[in-house]
Length: 334
Image (cartoon, rainbow, N blue to C red; front, side, top):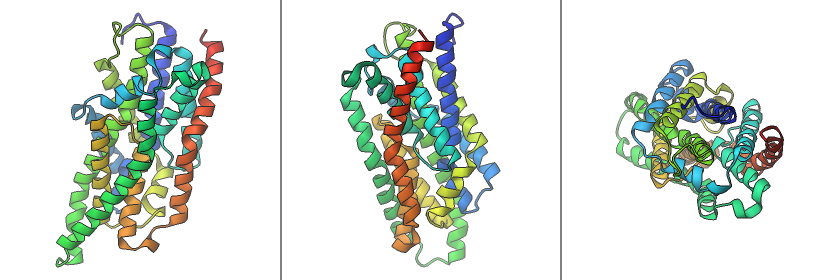
């Protein structure tokens, strides 16, 4: 980081990294819920496993999601310190509320809602880049649906392949395979989620003229965001693990493998397309999918319904909070 950056810029970068850390903390359950609930790994070991793959994700993915978040939701020309402050504080506030309540809401859509709310507070609807926002809103529906369908298909395919095997042998095999699927899911989580904060910091630097007049993501931003997310995952989100890993449906190692693999496939595709999807939505859809493959009654639909309600209100609530913090930002950052 350039030592010549003004204090307000350094402060806002620190707030962005705090959000990234909180994102890892809040979404740790997404990466480890299935492997913990199937008792393949104890929670304390699972978080180390997930944190490592969260961190190295930058080696495998481009920065398409960072570009969407940084320049495809709100026009970069309208971004200033108050907008970034409002967006981050709105998202952080909503994340803390849902984390304390044990609700697996989406950090991703809290951030998107925050960006939109702060942008609207500054310049009205003219601030919004509708193409990028519409793509992101569509992903709210499509990512859990994709996770659900892929997980359902994987369970059916795997069940057919192993139909003649002894249950104990199948269980033993998928206990090993869950290490692979959990690694892939954590890679997808780190690849998609950390890039959202990269985009925020990059557009902040752009607004200060610190990127040479062109929007791009410096390498130090990439590394900083991956470290912050990895550390957040390391500290874990135990309140939400219980909801994700056992309250929605009971999982076997085979079902855990299918859920994680379906989630990873969805995240890999979305990251390649530059779509900032919710890892929470994706893995929840996949877990519901493997439960429904067994029988519809295996899913605790009342829990799933409450999670969906949290999804629906996340963006507007984060946007509302962000608008309030934008006005505060105009006073304290002037």
